Image (cartoon, rainbow, N blue to C red; front, side, top):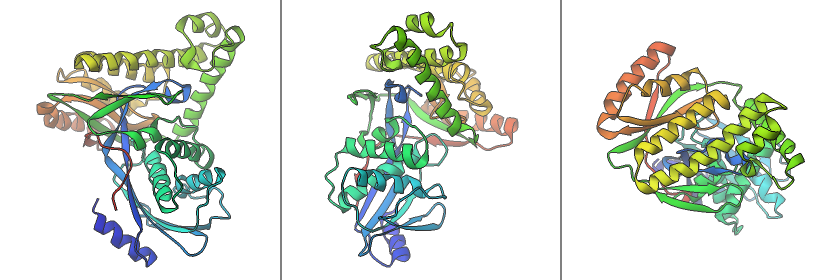
Length: 384
């Protein structure tokens, strides 16, 4: 994204020069899906696709937003904040609301937003928007927020103004990632540890299904409710348990299995996925990419069959990779019901793989795939 173009676009829409431009990346997650809101482990990294926010202060208390993707302007007074009927402003307004709830002052401002993180692909464009906004407002109004504060503000904005009870992973990855690293995040304590991402002759390839089934958000919240229900039952016998992070398979077998088979299956997936994250980190430390790939495949099987957040298109893409020895692992990534698969592919095989799988996907569904070869990137930064 060209900085001069951003500055020119900002001036064209607001007739003033931007004061600050912030870049906040999207993210991948190597393994650890739907574990974050269960206080578990995740293994994300920022990527070289980002949301860009340009801001400048106003003399009044109005908040004026322009989204390049939608070619729409939105305006509201900072004293009269409430969720908007249109979806996209809420990712920004929710951030302002959370800052205000901390007793910090945000004056009027103009904000222009653009980017190349594809929405609906499971790359956390929403978290990138929230973190870019919070980071820019922190700079503009000297709020003295830490990076962890910014991640928490983004998460709460999504809970309150967007209505998705997301975990902390996406915002944390957007803000705290480092290039050439992945990090294992403990979503309970927010302790994190970086691991070098050394792929050698392999690379990370994302395949965007270019579908997003509408039941995604509602089903996401239902999965969360089932996990919480399972925990509440276990706490009757084990009061020390606070979340699925504390639960063992034995506890599930003893308490949950006899009460509700579906709640049992959903909870068991989360417990097993946490174990896979730990095992994946051990494989990476040993440089064992074959084992890493097997854990990635096992993650998809759990997401598809047990947690049931996949869809026909995602399953088709993952199943197709088993025919190729040069693909070590593949799985759906993100909330599910569409978006991307993440694939660990040999570099010199990637062109052939993309060509063949794109043709078979088009033939099966009448939809074009979009491949993204991604590299890791640094977290949210001010670039102007």
